[in-house]
Image 1 (cartoon, rainbow, N blue to C red):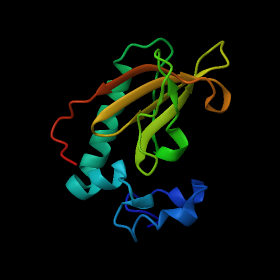
Image 2 (image 1 turned 135 degrees about the vertical axis):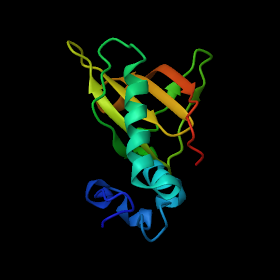
Image 3 (image 1 turned 30 degrees about the horizontal axis):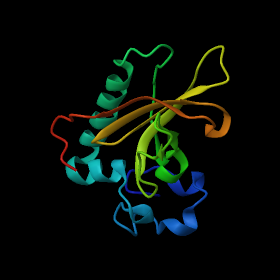
Image 4 (image 1 turned 90 degrees about the vertical axis):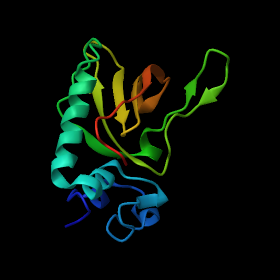
Length: 151
């Protein structure tokens, strides 16, 4: 087993020297929280798969044009924690760099932009951005009301 959830996080990660290892840190790579490890520790593989399935359904129910998610990946916060310019001119980040989230990137047909979705048990973020995360814009950021997940 390569990690608590069985995924090969190390093979995909450019920060593996900083991580400490999933199993070695009991699911707290980078000193943060991993949504997959938390759900597995709390409720086993059934909760892990149920949480992911319900999150995909929740994202698809948002009814955002061209936003259809078929799967979610584990993504390190430092990779997906974009900085957003607010109307008042201030910049803000919504995620934690050291946490691991469920997420995915969805290309917008006929555009050079993509949707990004990132979530954990508490929050769901949908954004739109250009190549390499340029000019990110928040489409939706909301507090989730998870059923029976108490991480």
